[in-house]
Amino acid sequence: MKIGVIGAGYVGLSLAAVLADKGNLVTCVDRDREKIEQIKMGESPLKEEGLDILVQENIEAERLKASSNEENAIKDAKIIFIAVNTPTENGQIQLQNLKDAVKTATNYMTDNYPVLAIKSTLTPGSTRKEILPLLQENGMEPGEDCGVCVNPEFLSQGTAIQDVREPDRIVIGELDEKSGELLSRLYSDFESPVIRESMETAEMIKYASNSLLATKISFINEIGNLCKELDVDIYDVAEGVGMDSRISREFLDSGTGFGGSCLEKDIEALISLMKNRGIEGSVLEAIMSVNESQKVKPVEILEERIGSLEGKRIGILGLSFKPGTADVTNSPAIDIINQLINRGAEVTAYDPEANENMKKIYGDIEYSETYTEVLEGSDAAILVTDWEEFNNIDRGDLKKMSNPLLIEGRKIDHNAPEKFTEGVTWP
Ligand code: UDX
Image (cartoon, rainbow, N blue to C red; front, side, top):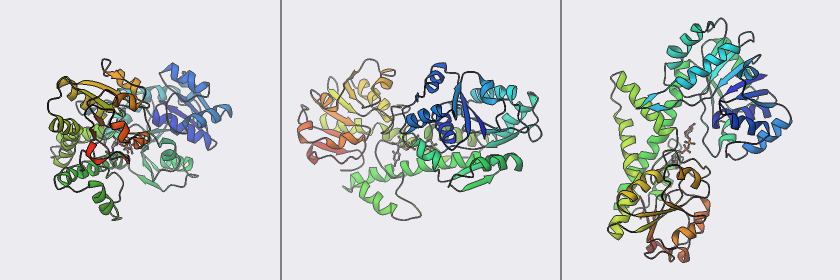
C-alpha cells in the first residue's frame, strides 16, 4: 500500500520504517531538512534501538523514502499518517503543527478516498471539532472526499520498534466504516488485536492509558515514602503486589517519579479539559503533585544526611528521563540540578548518552565522560537514571568520594555496601 507519513519524529519514523519493512511503499516528510537528508542516506536521525538498521535496509530496498517535498509523500497515498507533535502550553494542547500538516495534506491528496490517520495525541473531541471543519475549509468533505481515523500510538522510547511491530493493541477511531476498513487492512498482518471505536473513544483511550500508567507510578511512590519510614523495601512490596494479575508488576518502580514528553503533558491536558467541563480532577492533580515532590526528594535526603549543601561538590549519575534514551525532557535530573544550584552546591554530572542534551539546559555545570570521574572529588552523589552500567558501582567507586554517600533515585543492583547508599523510597 502507498503510505505517506508527515512528521519523522519517534512516532512517525518508527511507524514508517516498520510499515516499509512489511512491504508497503512509505514516504515520510518533515520540515527538518537535515533529518530528511540523513534518512535519505539510510541513517536514522534518532537514537532508537533497531531503528538505524530498519531505516538503512528499507531505504536500500526503496520501500522507504524521505522527502522535503510534501507532494511526494501525499500524492497517490492511500493512507496519510500525521505524526507531528502537539505540545501543551499552560495545559492546553497546541494544534498548530497538526493543523498545518492537515492543510498540507489536503493540498496534495489525490487518491480516491484517501484516509488521514492521526497519530498525534489529541484531547477527546478535538478531531471532530477542529480537524473535520479544517478539511471542509480546504475543500475536502470528510466522509465523502476523504476518510479520517484517530490511530493513537502507545510506543515508549527505547522500545519503539518492538512497540510498533507488536503493540498490545491497535486502536482505530473511525469517522466511518470505510476509513476504519482501510486502516484495518493495513494492520491485517500484525498479530495484535485491533479494536475499532469512535474517534472520541480512541482519543480517550490514549489519555486514559497514559494517565493510568502515571497513577501507578505516583501511587507506588506514595506507598514507598511510607515504606521507607517503616524500614520496608518498596521493591519487595511491588513484587508481591504485582503478582496479582489484576494489578501487574509493570510501572511499579518507585523512585524520583516520571519524566518524558508524554505522561506529564497528557495529564495536564486532561486536567485542563476537565476544568473546562467543570469536573474535578482530584486524582490527576494528586498524581502530578506527588510526582513534583518526588523528583526533588534525593536533594532533601542528601541535605538531611550531610547538612548544608553550600559549596559542596555533588555528582549526578544519569541525566536522561529513563535509561536507553538521550532525551532529557522533564527528567527529574533537571529539578534535582536546579535544587542543588539553588542551595549553593557545585554540580558535576555524567550520562552515557544525554550529556549533550543536558548542556542545552545547564551549560555551566561540569560534565564527565565516566561515572568514576564524577565520583572522584565529589562530596556525595545522586543516582537519577538506572543505566545498566551503574550496576557495576562498588565500594571502591564510592570511596572515591570524600564523604562516600550515594542517594539513589532508582533502585539498581550494585555491589556497594549499604552504609554508603540510601534509596529515595527504600532503606
Ligand atoms: C510513555 C508511555 O509509556 C507510552 O505508551 C506513550 O506512547 C508515551 O509515553 P515514554 O515517555 O517513552 O512512554 O516512557 P515510559 O517508559 O512510559 O516512562 C515514563 C517515565 O516514567 C520515565 O521517566 C520512567 O523512568 C518513569 N517510570 C516508568 C517510573 O518511574 N516507574 C515505572 O515503573 C515506570
